[in-house]
Image (cartoon, rainbow, N blue to C red; front, side, top):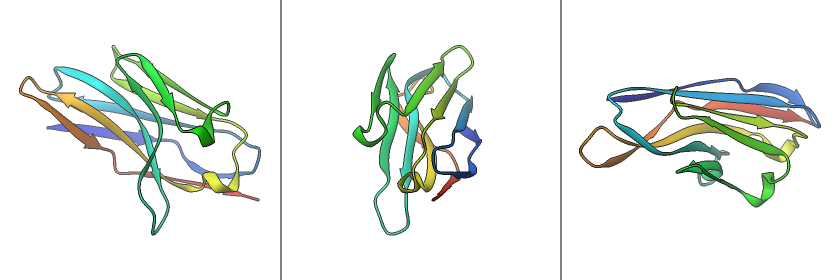
Length: 118
């Protein structure tokens, strides 16, 4: 089994910064991708930033404000969020596509709330 443990998040004023971190543990042979999604009530869970074999992809709405960093050796990924806006308010979920030696599977963290006040 694979676990994703998230940390960070919280309440911040518009224009402020937060950092989210996620660490993967368990029966891991290889991680193909790792990053962050977010979801607001009543809407779909959308990609924010993902690292796929070393290449970072960002949602247009966060380009230039968010930076994804991945520590492959320690199975960690962090998301530095700057110039936060009220519309960034959401539950942020860490996602990883992992192989334990027999195929690739998606795993999700438990989610961490980010609230940006105006």
